[in-house]
Amino acid sequence: MKRRDLLGLVGTGAGWLALSGSARAGSATGGVAAQRVVIIGGAWAGLSAARELRLRAPELDVLVIDREPTLRSLPLSNPWLVGRTPERLPRLDRTALANKLGYRFIADDVQRIDRAERRVHTAQGVFDYDWLLVATGLSYDYSAWYGTDYKAAQVMQELFPAGYVANELDVLKQRLQAFKGGNLVINVPAPPSRCPPAPYERAMLIAWWIKTEGIKGKVTVLDAGGGLPRFTRLFADRYHGLIDFHPYTVIRSVDPLTRRVTTDDGDVPFDHAMLSPPMRASMLIEQAGLCSLGTQGKLAPWGAVDPLRLHSLADERVFLAGDLLGPVSPLFGHYPKTAHMATRLGVSAGRQIAVRSRFGSDESLVDLPASVCHVWLDADPAEQLRIETTYRLRGDGVIAQSVSQHDNPQPRDEDLQWGLGLYAQALGASLER
Ligand SMILES: Cc1cc2nc3c(=O)[nH]c(=O)nc-3n(C[C@H](O)[C@H](O)[C@H](O)COP(=O)(O)OP(=O)(O)OC[C@H]3O[C@@H](n4cnc5c(N)ncnc54)[C@H](O)[C@@H]3O)c2cc1C
Image (cartoon, rainbow, N blue to C red; front, side, top):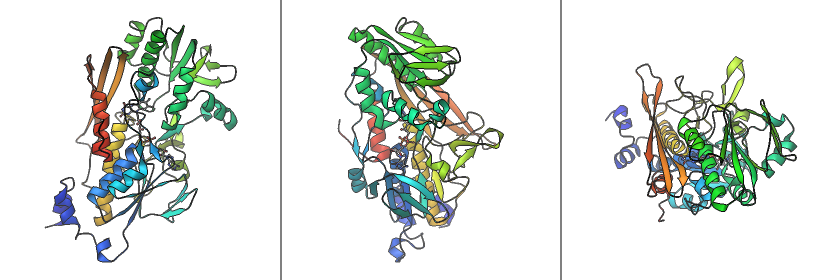
């Protein structure tokens, strides 16, 4: 059998594993040390890649590093935030999952990547790699509001967290519960941003909560763009008087002490706020020289990859997956920054590493992702919208995107089943709920 035939078996499970065990020179069974894969970021993208590597290339030594010992789900967190449901998806103990699936996990903060030496420097030590996957998601770019005044940014984040990163969820909920009335301001940051429907869903669920709790207040939504019509129509009809929508309103700065948002159209005072500055990939990729080129030759704060194979444009030993990716197509720019997408990209990156660690490069191995999002339009009775995004490769090699929306007026936990399905299929965490 030729090498090309072996590669064709990727994705066919047992057949692939049986054939490739003897195909890799230098495997653990051949008496040579196993190649090391380090995955930085153990969430949707990173854990999916780790599981895929265990399935496809069991001879590799796989280490996942994440700051947090527990995975907390941002997907499906909005109904939990307003007390409409219990936390929809269980928290996952990363060490227990790693032990179950047969890779290693350490809770540690990665501070530097040395690509020349193929080393990752953490708060606790140094880890060598043969292959690196960076799946560190995104972070807030408070410099857009505060320049280099890091103290101001810290005060803002502590007092009024935006809730787009998982470790803010508990404090986000506590702050919301303390809201006793007045103006609660949330914003829709300029794209690219994490889970584009999430702020609209949050606005509708908080409006429902304010009404249900009998609180005298409203939600003001400051949208850097024009809004998504499906949601803005609901704001105007069903949530009239509860949601005050301001399209094309870019936030210039926020004073958390006087509680005032400054926009080009004037100041907006608030009693409580959930405000996100522009988003960017985590700082690590900038340090590691993995960013894409933006306009006028400046670096853009997103990871630059070969869109079909997910290796860094700067280094074929380094892969990137998940929300930190930069543009992948001239037709639509970034993939939607969703957990579903992150799992599919993680699986693809894992596959690429499995094949390359055995055979070197394989240009023919290409997976295109997909994404599904369940958005709550109302809380009681529940009403949801399902947004599906699929991709195809055009004849000229450019990735094309199709988006469709499906009303779900009487949901029966489809969102929960979707989330549990991702946990099981992508992360390998089978759970009864
Ligand atoms: C309110 C809300 C609702 C959402 N709903 C949905 C939904 O319904 N469906 C959906 O598909 N998506 C949804 N999303 C989007 C989804 O949460 C993200 O797209 C997803 O989390 C991206 O996964 P990731 O693995 O790329 O990054 P992340 O989830 O951000 O994970 C990155 C990981 O890297 C770790 N890390 C970062 N830097 C370091 C470092 N230096 N050292 C060590 N560890 C590090 C972090 O601790 C983190 O665990 C929602 C998001 C929000 C905010």
